[in-house]
Length: 287
Image (cartoon, rainbow, N blue to C red; front, top):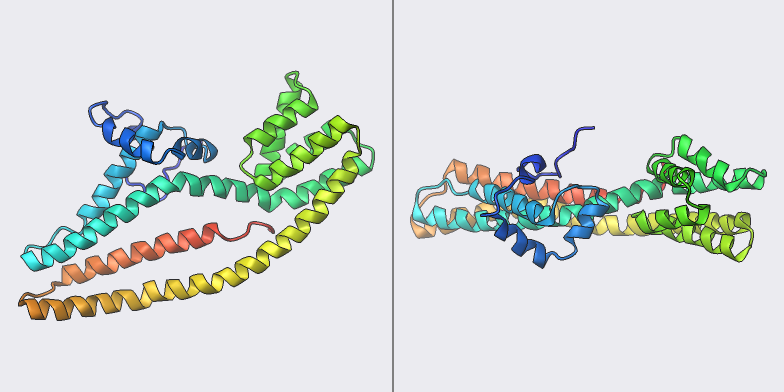
């Protein structure tokens, strides 16, 4: 499967893996600041060295910033330089934080199918099917990322690992805190000789209640984000252009059409980033 470039990153990852060492000092500096980036890249399944990724993010952010430096008059140039700097900083931080966002998205894909898969696992165990066969059934079912995670568990068991050891690998590997908690509950119950069925039943009940609470909290949070989005999407561009027109009149220079278009473009970029961020906050709990 062809690797996809991170959202809004203008520099291809394939080329970013082959940067010259003469320029990597920028990437190394940024990767030291974003010390958790290495683990975020691993969790997001983005196969690239942190220094190379940071340099690609820096180049991409520079391109976004240069898009605004097209005006000739000094007054307008200074104004557009401010927008350019803002675009550079904003896009750089977005690129550097993207692996963390992508890792959360993978975790949300697990959470989306987890309740249904655990219910299936519980039903099969209650009917007398062994834990291995039940996990194998989940792996062969259409539960998205959950099926892939349990498929790896089945593969580990087939290579000689015990069920508890394979499940421990899953607990350390998974990006979903809910799946991690459920798997550790199963492992603890297996090692203590308790009933896995009872432990799973308790987890299913807790998970169902937790998902209902998550939906309620998101509904309340969405009202605030809607207000912020309306301010950025409608109020700020119009007020910003009005301010620039007044300021340019006082300064004796004019605001060109190109400057207005670039300001509108910056507002559109911010709106897209906000939509993307809000989308990542949607609770992935039901199909």
